[in-house]
Image (tube, rainbow, N blue to C red; front, top):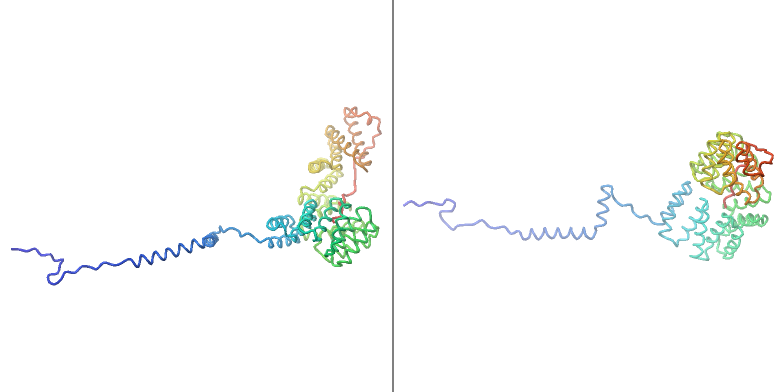
Amino acid sequence: MYIKRDYSRPMFGKQTTKPRRNYTPIIFLFGLIVGSITLFVSSNFDSIQEQALELIGLAPTPTPLPGDLATLASQLFVAGDMQEAADLFERAIALRPDNIDYLYEYGKLMIDMDNPTRALELGESIIEINSNDPRGYVLKARSLVWIQRSSDAIPVVLAGLDLNRGYESPLYSALARAYTDTGKYEEGAEAGLFAVQADPGSSDARRSYAHALSWVGNKAEAISQLEAAVRIDPTNIAAHLELAFQYLGQNRDQEAIDLYDRILALQPRNSRALLRLCTTYRKIGQFERAIGYCQDAINADPSSVGAYYQLGILQYNQYRFDEAMIAFQACVEIAPDDLDCTYRLGLTYYYMDDCQNGWDILQDSLLMAQSRSNTDAIVGYIREGLIAIGQKCPEFGRRDPTLATATPNFIPEVTPEAITPPAQP
C-alpha cells in the first residue's frame, strides 16, 4: 500500500508552529505620541498658526502699542509728514482716550495743520479728564486765538495760570497773542516777555513775543526774537514763516526766499512755503516763476484758496484769461463766500466776452460786498465791471438804470496786495 507523504511536516518529533507577534506595546506608544502632539497643538494653536503663516508670508501684522504709535507720530511730524502723524495719533487715542500726553501733542499738531476746531475739542477733553492739568487750558486758549475768539481765550489762560502747576511759558504765550489780537498791545508785549523769561529756550514763546512786538511798532526786536526762535528750533516751520514775512516787510526779499527754501528742504510739500514763494516772486516781478510756485502750492494742497487766488491774479495780469478763469472758478468752488475770487471771476468773464456769466457773477458779488464792511474799493471795481459789460453788451446795461449814467473808468489790470494770512499761534 502506497502512503502519500506530506513533506511540509517533519517526519519525526513534535510538530512546531510559528510564534505570533504582540503589537500592543507599539500601538500604545504610537497612541501616546499622537495624543501628546494633539495636546501640544491644541494648547499652542495661535502661536503655531502665526509661525506657519509667517513662513508663507501671510502672518498678520501685530497690533502696535499706543505708546509706539504716539512716538512714531511725533517723529513723522518733525519730518513734515503731518497727515500720517495725525492718523497715528488718532489710533493711539482710540486705544488710550484718557491719555493726556497723546491728547496734548495731537492738539498741537492740529493747530499746526490749521484744524483749531479739533484742537479745541482735545483741549476741552483734557480739562474734563483732569481740570488741574494746565495743558488743557494751553490747548484750549491757543485754539480760541486761532479761530479769532481771543477775548474768550483770555479767561481760559488766566484760569490755567491760577493752577500754579507749571506751563507758565505756553500759557503766557497764548495770553500774549490773545491780548494783542484784542487790541491790548502793551499787555500783549508784557505777557510775551513773561513767556520768554519763564522759558528762554522756548521757540514758541519768542514767536508770541515777536507777534506782540510787531504790533507795538518794535519791528527790529520782533525780528531779533524770531531769529532767536529759529536758532533755538531749526525745525520750527511757523517761526521760519513769520521771520520771512518780517523780512519781506523790510524788503529783505532774498533772505525771505532763503527761509522758504529752508522750509522746503525740511518739508518739500509745505503748501504755505510754496504759496509764500509765489507771492514773493510776484512781488519782485518774476511772474513766471511765481506762477510755477503757485501751481506747486496747489499740487501740495488742492484745497488752498489762497494759491488759486494768487494763480488767478498772476494769469489775469498776464492777460491769460482762460487760465485765470480756471483758477478763480476753482477758488469759488472751494470757498463760495470768497469775495475776491468771486468778483474777479466776473471780471475775467467780461474779458472772455461772456457777458451773461460776467454780469450774473458781478451782480452776486456786488450784493456780497455791500453786506460787508471795508469793501468800498471792491464795490468800485465791481461797478466798473458792470458798466463795461453794459457797454459791450447793451442789453445788460439797460437792466440797471443806475449804471447807465455812470462814468466808466474800468481798469483792466487790477493788482491787489498779496494775501497775508494771520500769524499762526
